[in-house]
Image (cartoon, rainbow, N blue to C red; front, side):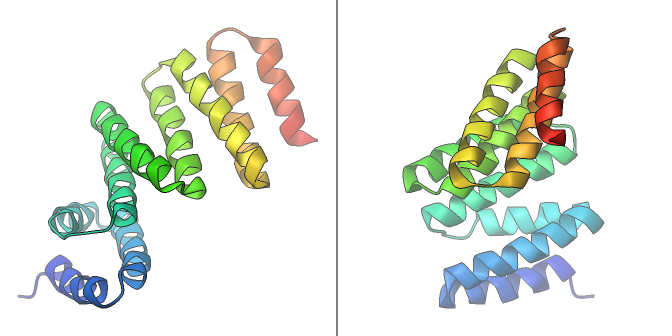
Length: 168
């Protein structure tokens, strides 16, 4: 029987060799599908792609995806490490969308762990980055996440203020 992950990866490997940016786009689609529908295949794809030489951008994207897989499986400390590595790579590349995503994901990781002060700090940074880039949905998400962190710290008025901004 043909292993679907190995078959998919063989296709990806050849695509990466020919055109890494096309390979990364294909990777994102296959990984997202596997993560949402076949987590065991997503884990296998991660193992295979991590053994492939990639550019710093490819490494950052794969680190971010690995963190998503870890978070989905409740491995929050490991997810944090992978998101931090992705953030470092994205920052070195001045890849603003990647930085914004990794910062927001770190905030959510801290929220899941009940580390509300750290979560708030990252949500504030995600909010600033979203404002800077004009990403309205990112602004709304960051405000929502910020309000949850503030509420969990007993700062109800500040949390309510964030929610009102989202609703306006």
